[in-house]
Image (cartoon, rainbow, N blue to C red; front, side):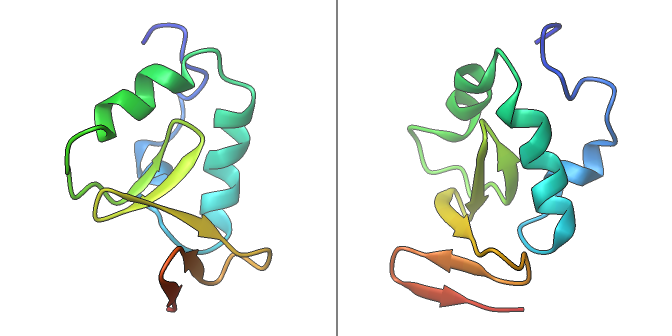
Length: 82
């Protein structure tokens, strides 16, 4: 993962599932050449990971979508709010 753009970033930035820091973490991922490798850390098994990896936001090992205001996460089965 030496090629990861986040290697020098604060690791706590990627432990977020809500708020503005999610968008900051995703900004790193959007330009990164190793997003597939990061996603493989979380998937395909159930990992219970919460945070940002592989240009995706995860909660309990499931992919969720941040909403545009960054305050809540819109999941496939409903909304998870703050």
